[in-house]
Length: 293
Image (tube, rainbow, N blue to C red; front, side):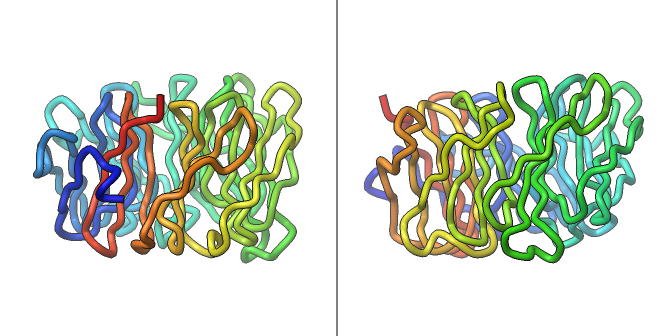
């Protein structure tokens, strides 16, 4: 990876989940979140958060990040790098393998493992709706005028994975779509919704115009199991796993077009402007790639 990266950052601690802020990113770390810039060898901002966890999101001038210590959602002003609100939402996964979504004038987080999606109004920093979804749903993303939630299945039982589509105008589930086993993280972009299925190391592609699965992409050997991440942008879908550092899918063909290594433990991936950011917390590294042209 280092030979193909335009920048390699050494970030002490446990740099893991990412959120996009222009061409920069924010990363979770031990007891803090940090803002990274490709041109800077050290973080350009740091904000204390007791136990930041899960994939974050930037919207409404703020970074939205879950805190596992008290199962809350922190709101951080990205201009001042200061915490401006702590919202006691609850977390569906107290271990932090979750994601926050933003869109339709709201922040969204899975708040109960029994199946609750909470909607937060950024004007008041209060929960304004609790939407019933399938149990054991942990990750959400916004795209194509909808909120999309992965349902891993009861205790991650193989063969029970699905994705639910929520209409933000009505706060109702409008579709439940079977996908691969144990879907966790998901992405919306490149014309589709994509799930990383931890149970068998596949990626499911959903057409948002029909709410149907239109492709299942087999990943290189070893890209199954817990952890991992997925992002869409720059003409590619990027898949990050523990045993294979990074794989790129071409959405025009639904085929793997590139694989990056060596394996470096778990981490995350995000597309920010013309850059692709990849974390590897086990080796305290963050790599920055140029998007393919």
